[in-house]
Length: 404
Ligand code: PLP
Image 1 (cartoon, rainbow, N blue to C red):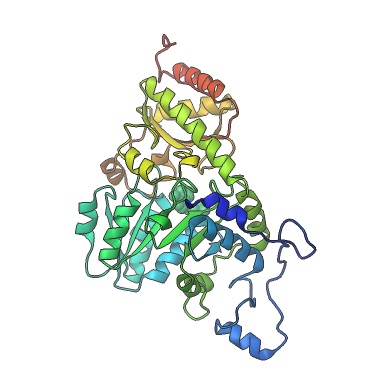
Image 2: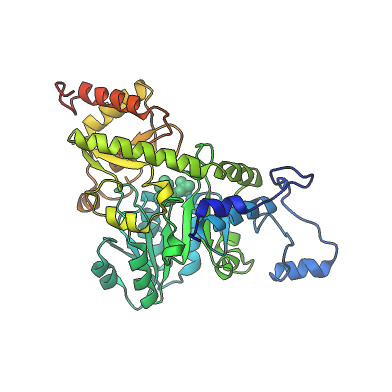
C-alpha cells in the first residue's frame, strides 16, 4: 500500500489518563523515581519509558514528536522551541570544528545567517550552491564536508530540490542529508526519497494558527538519542525546549493538517494560474512552466497539491508595498511575515525575511526587491478573493485598468 503520511498520523492513538480523547498534558518539569538505581540508569539513557527532566523529554513532547515522525516516516523525532532551535541543534550535533557544510543558497534568511555568520565561530564553514544544479553541488563537496542541507521548496524563491538525486549524492560522499520540509508538509516526504534528517518549523503550516513558534527534527532513533544526550546532545545542552502546553496544542492542530493543506494548495493553484494569465510574473511549483514542476510532480503525494506558497514579482519595492498595504486595507490578508495561517499573509522577502542575505547575493540568486511572497489562506471563495486582488493591482498600477 502506498505510504500515506496523513493516515500514519491518524493511526496513532493516545488517550488521556482518564480516557480523554486527547492525551493528558504533562505539567511537570521533573519526575520522581521509585528507586535511585532507575534514576541513574535514566541519566545513562538506559531506562526506556522513564522521564527525567522536561528539557530532556516530556510525555507531551514525545506524543507530538511521535506523530510528526509518523508523518515523515522516520523512526522518531525531537520537538524544539522553534524551527531555528531544531535547525541549529541539528547542525551543531552533526558538525565538529573543521567540518564543512554544503547548503542551498536559497534557504530561510535565519538559516543562512546561522551558517554564514554564526557557526564560522566554531570553525564550521559553509559553501552555498544552486541546489538545482547537481554538478555544482558535487563540485562544492570537500573531504571535510559532513552535511548536505536544503529546503524541499526554498524560501522565498520556491526552488524545488530534487531530493532523490541529492540523496544519492549525499550517500556517495557519506554526508548526512538534512532537509527542511517547512514549505511542503504532507505534499513531499523527504525521508521516503532518501533524506536522513527532516526538519520543520512547526510555526508554519503544521501548527497553522500563528499562535506559537515551534520546530522538530525527525530522524533515526540513534540520531535523536544523540541530540538528547545529557553529555553531548545539542538539544539537551543548548536547551531549545518546547513547553508541554504548546506541544499539546500543536498536536491538536496537526489533526487537521491534511484538510488545511488541500485547501491552501487548491487556493494557491487557482490564484497562480489566474495571475499568470493576467501576465504577472508568477512563481508556483504547480505551474507547468516552473523549472521544478516535473520534479515536484514526480515525487509528490498527490492528494495534497503543490502547497500554499506563491510569489509575484511586481517590479519594484514601492509597488509591492503599495499593493500589500491596499490588500490589507481590503481585508484580503495581512502584511506579515510567516506562513501557513488561515488568512493570506504577504511580505516582500528582500526587505524582511531574507534581509540577512546581502543585496549582491540576493541579486545573484534572483531575489528582486519587487518580489512579494504570498502564503495563500484558507479562503472559502477564492474566485472572490481573486477579483478583489485584481482590482487592488489595477488601483496601484500593477495591472492595466482596461483589463477585464
Ligand atoms: N525554515 C523555514 C523554511 C522557515 O521559513 C523558517 C521561518 O520562517 C524557519 C525554518 C525558522 O523557523 P522558526 O521561525 O520557527 O524558528
